[in-house]
Length: 256
Image 1 (cartoon, rainbow, N blue to C red):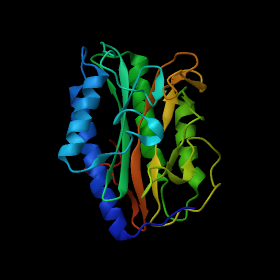
Image 2: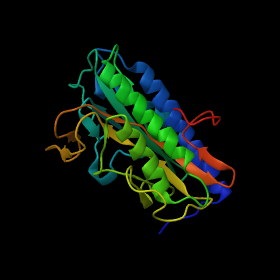
Image 3: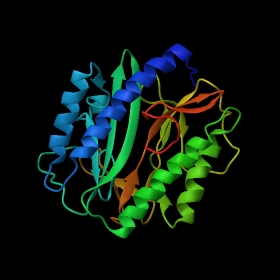
């Protein structure tokens, strides 16, 4: 069942998502050749405690870390490790969430490590653009698939593919709520969007084929063809005044 949040609940979720935004910004600034994903996770855990919130991912269905850190062909759910050292030219997806006063915040971004290839740079740019276009469709009386179609049409036009095994989701008192928010589909399908819905919109885009496989750790999803993958996410409240990007410090536009 899709839950409609009150203005008071959205205010709490805004605070949770601002914590997410602050921590992702600080972790993103740490990205450089030679740093380990274990160090990034350690910093994220320290920051979330200082801000009086709880990490949303750690312990969720057994996930061992506060931060998801996915490198290159890793699509989502990469497990941080002090043995995973970033090198020049890598790209890394950082996915992070918190729980504050019983409500969740969730966002993600992809960061280049030093100088990256033209392909990697374009992949990150197009994925980020697709999120912006999707958020533009998060309007009262639109249909859920209008969001999905905005992502797919932009990404495929640019020569990339949309991951279909993982999707966005509603968010609120639970990290994952109804509805699921696919990153593909025909427009004008699915449920009608209403004020008070909050959606975690998160395009996961591959440079090559769309197929992914989960590794033996039971979490890390990688592209089957080992092509690069990028991931961006915002938690967005649908309001009568348009989309309210809860996980962005400034709300004048939809870029991360």
